[in-house]
Image (cartoon, rainbow, N blue to C red; front, side, top):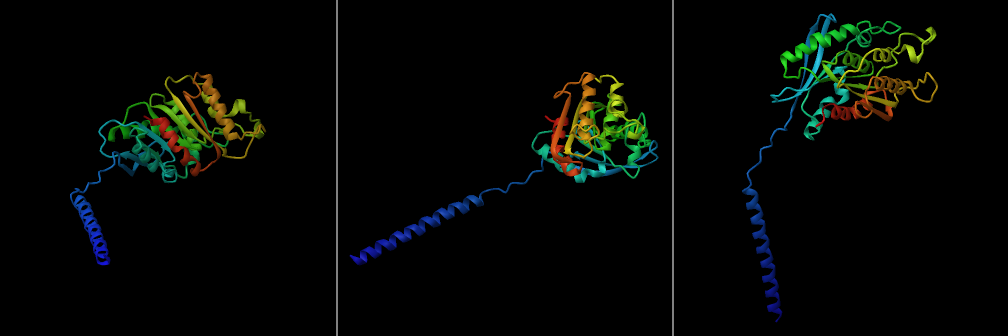
Length: 303
């Protein structure tokens, strides 16, 4: 009886081994029959390159950074961005790539204009310099964008002829607002990150007032409604500490909101034509701007 028990136990153990080997063999065979899948390219792999344009208006060689998807045969919407030298800090390529892979935006051609040591002169408002004569070459920068850069891009790349987007950071944002506002046939959307809308024609010692001396506000006030134009503004609650009118709101926010009021007076509607993104704790730096960049891109090019 004891021998019979041992025999049955051994037989049961052998059956378990045979069963395991059979199952394992089936698994191995199934893996062997699987054809290796070739990893396909992402739908929109991006190219990022730098090019140089000789500008007669600016009297210098201008570097531009271009980011665009490979293997696209359709005309692309265009994003012109001041301060293109900051694309790495903004994570521009990564943001565009991620949004494309998530199917949140359409393919675009993004072009960043590199500023140099003349930035304080080339960026500003084309119609007049500020009270310190900064922005004295802003008209030349405007002419470079409209008369040199856009024709160059339209000749070399598949881009739309109109209805494109212009944007910028800080002083570059003021410049983008001015260029876009003055060229509605070329641009239908304007994006401004922490715009320098304090840009003024008088110092406080000369009798400056918010109502009369902020240059961009005066430009919009003296202009007319541009049909179809839309605006996206961002400001951070820690963009600065200055509060000229002591109302408890920093000037960066006040100046932006006041410009939006001027635009409302021209017939633009909040949350439709005018989008405002206030970043709690947002500072005047690339870290803050890079975090809201995807929101801007979706607003500008979203599906």
